[in-house]
Image 1 (tube, rainbow, N blue to C red):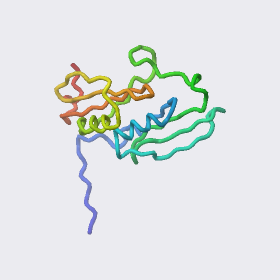
Image 2: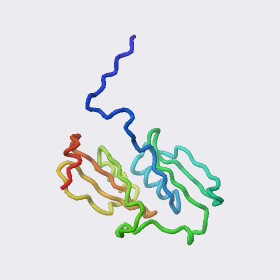
Image 3: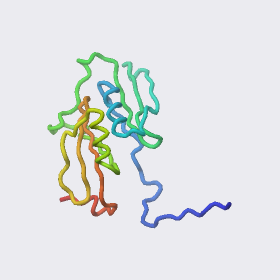
Image 4: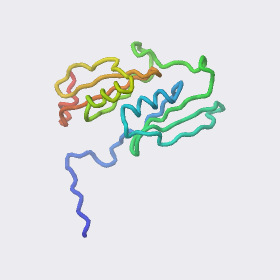
Length: 160
C-alpha cells in the first residue's frame, strides 16, 4: 500500500511555530499541585521525577503531564518558614498570575474537579464565544480553564 500524500492546510501555521512544551514552577509542596492537575486532566500522570541539588539546595522535582505537554514542579527541601509564598493574586506585584488551559468540555472538567473536592474560585466574564473559570489550588496557584465555542480566531480572540 502506497503512502498517502499529506494534504497541508494553506491557512495552517508553519511547522516551526513555537508551542509551549512545559512550564517550570517552584512550589512549596509538589503533591497538592500534582493531585489538582491529575484531577483536572485524568490522562496526565507523573512522567518522571527525581531529585538532587540545585545550587547546593536539595530538591525534588516531578514532570506532570502527557507525552506532549507537562508542568515541572520543583520542591526545595528547606524549612517551610523559609519557602516564601506565591504572589497575592489580588495584588500587582510581578510573578505568575495564572496558567490557562483550553479544554473541549468545561462542564466535565468542573464535575471531575468537584468530585476531587475543588470548587471554582471565580467565573470568567461573559463572552459570546467562550466560557472560562478559575481555580486556586492548595498551593495558591491559579489555573484558568477555557472552552471555546468557535474556531474562528477573530471570534475566539474578541476583546470587549
